[in-house]
Image (tube, rainbow, N blue to C red):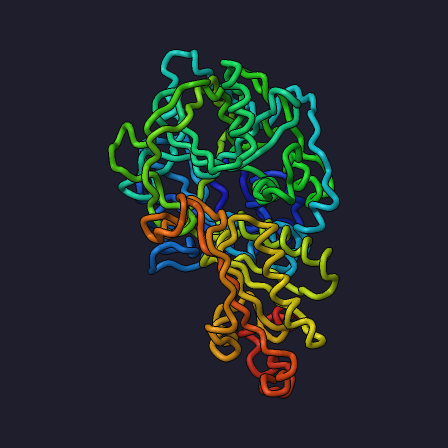
Length: 516
């Protein structure tokens, strides 16, 4: 592993110091990871941002629903980008649950609960007056001669059939033109020209509602696109309603995670705020009544690979962001992800888990121990719930827990319920429970024609003629729990509890044994 410091003193020379670095931006996050072997890797080998970069990381650390072969691996910094001599690109910052735990000071199996507490203890962002905010150390105005997004920033393509280069981790910050409250969301942003981006909104997104309000008045909506952030900001922004209802600023969840507010500054070219310690900020306006075909420059018919693992179709009509400026830190890092990879599971899934866990704990205190938004569903479509049955009545409560989960998170498609002796984070253990504690005709609950997610290609009338529209689905509960009355027949074989470290010390560490 190369942990040299070729750029802007990115990493500390003292690994022990790095382990205890306070994380408040992307660079301090990388400093912490570099102090943990196997979590961060740099390469100076030149890479092409057009499909090659994602192709490399697919084999090193993408994971998730990416086509095999893939695996979990370190976050990776590419220091030499073909065609962009002054740029570097980071991928996979949160592409493992263990790494997210390191970045949020939390054991991986307790991230659900930690995120749930952050929602309850949210701290609102604050606007600060800085003479030179880190995110504005370098300013490029779109009105300047030679300004061109396509040559300024190395937006990658994930595959050779992408609609174009995409900013995959651009956190869009917009403000309701009527009420004045702000919202942040990660959206699909395709570079369409020297100063234009298209933006894809899934149904119900709050910033799209802001856009519609502005458009109804013939006005543009000013936004900032913030990239290269403290990971607490990105993951906190991925909560959805009803946990974060209309008017709730998700930046306050990052405040709850860090115990201090996220700092904002005024943009230089539009009437909007940006995140003060972002690596790169694109400032612009969503234009009223302007639409473009997503693949207008490539005509591939595809957009980019999304979280279910498929290359979705290019959208025929998307709103346009007119870019006014790009501001950045010196030696800025462009942060990206591989669309269907494990990083999406972390970003979308852990907030999903926290939302479901909070709701279940409020409705049934102590009944649910864990919720896992499984990577097979990209953190959105599949959840595993671990319950603690104490009497026969709890047979019904297990199914009620699944129904509550489906109500809390509307995009959820499948729920698997397991007993307390099954590890919800271990797919083999979950499938064992499904194999030995599940009968298809009596252990399955079907809820047909319920709203789901438009990016799942099976949720279409073409796949199932009974469905009225794309994004409507049949939701399924798989009750993989043993009936309480038969619990003795389903008791797992119990082995003697022995500390294995004296016999094979190189295979274990204390934290692993303590967790078990």
